[in-house]
Length: 388
Image (cartoon, rainbow, N blue to C red; front, side):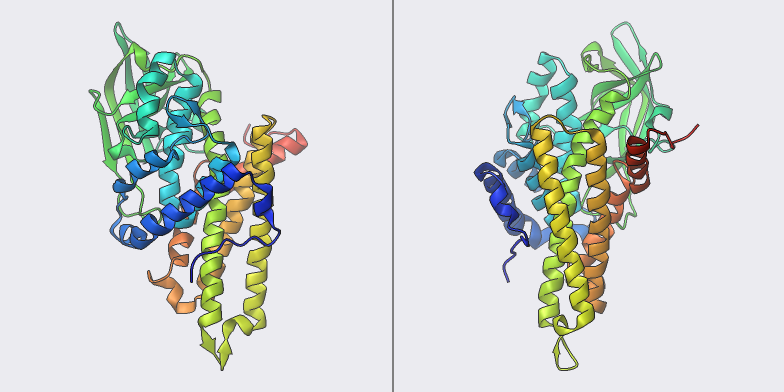
């Protein structure tokens, strides 16, 4: 049976024609190009690099950025693109999120005109791949503790440090590296062929297997003066990028929900036990009703999230609420879908198990569930519970 998105509250009519067109174009791409092979890539731990040029040709790399070869779509259109990509697999959406929100955005927002002209058109086309180096082996939720250092030299900068859990690290052409320069966090565009730069892939993952995850090692890594992103200093720089990415994750999580619900509903209608489809039993209907309720709430939350961003009134704390809520429920719905599928749910013949594993990474990265809880808590109480 062909995929049909759950739209219990007729939300589709609230999107613009452009937004629906962007969503439907990516939905078709995912159905045609991603779904037939994503299980194999997940099993083998490989990323489908052949899709990158197609992403570029459709304008879905940095789609909400304006100029420099970018599509200039609305934030909501970008969100719906993320939704459809993650319906295919979190690893596919992660690649596009990192490329657009974490690598293209800082160049677009914090870079010089020369940096924008040099990198953004090629990145939008998928000809230049980026990765984002913030998280370190000992510092994830507390980026202010980063140990990576940059030192000014006669001809540029020398960087030393290690970054971990870096999406696309070993296939990237450039890395956006955040390091402390004179005790201030600064961003650098580091070509991955730079002297002293090395990327090592992390193996043994049981989540996000259809995604490349790496460790970056910078040992006296030398870059020129043109590597520095000059228009930002401090934690505001990387957090601004993460805010863009978290917006997309909030939408992407709905893609996970929709994929698992669609599969579970179809399976429950076909699976016969005790003489009738299991969809006819009260306990299964309760699970499906909960799925429908939480998906609909998340869709409405995302719609308003997009409209706030378009109005330029969106606050980071509101993004935290959406990321926290939607990923939590995507996790619960993936588990429930796997439960409805019974023993079949633990095989790679079905997708709920793959989504269930992937969402554990999404639950953790770009602000853990607990960290976003504290962000919201501080916002409503005015009291900082992060530490002393």
